[in-house]
Length: 358
Image (cartoon, rainbow, N blue to C red; front, side, top):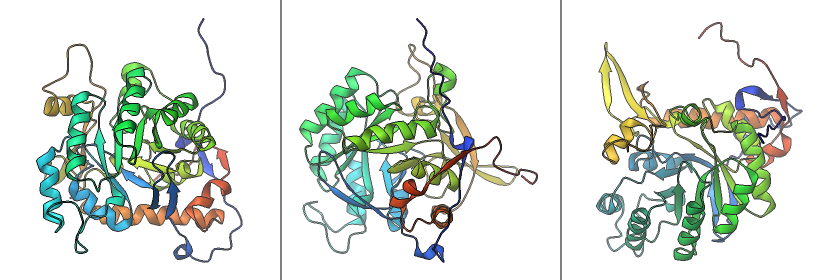
């Protein structure tokens, strides 16, 4: 029998945050850093809980070197090989044996996350890199469909092999799968199916969940057992980041927001005197032709390729983003990012922007 859930699910565009009386005089008084202790690995992490997505057009070593200056995590894409990683460490650290980092090194591993898929090849590759560079302590297990039993077993396998590493797992959008992956060994769950700007999963499969409601549901489930969640995808402006945090997200991951910069991957092209950078989903024809020899005959592309106007250095985008979130906190009277979800009341809207001048 077909089941229909009657309760309306909401996206970022469906709501605004209601302002509240505030005693904060200036955005400079606001603290965006948070401290978390992870469920299984018992690691304590402090920083601005924003993550650059592990796409090969955003999750680059160059992006990491800039984002770490702002206490922001970069999830490095999985297509760098062992020698790429070693060269990166050598170029940015004096620790030739990787056992003890020099005080002069430019790498802060609190803001560096390695990515892996769920295959045996991915597991062995990740294990080899982590054996060479044990200072990396965050692992992202990233698959499009986090609902398979195979993926649950993958999480268990990684937890057994890396008991002291922070394990991030996703993607899912519901409470029950949030709980299952946390109980399987994940510390942090990545929530989001289809909200990304170059993701076509909802179009190709009809599967998905409005992102704001997904964050609220998954956060409630995770926090009940001591876990944390990442809102992955759908944030197009700084206000969307604030809404995700207000809905209970512990971290926010974004791809398109960080695409098109000097530090981003993707080819730089010029048309009619204007510069663009290519940005594509990791399940797109472009990505699969680049990394997998093409789209397998049993599947279809679930991503698209777009040209983004070249934005210059990512530093300016980061400052604008963080400034917007700080401003949100002043509007609701929250001095710290941790307080935002407690101070947030959403109001339903039919229209939130005046677009007369686009």
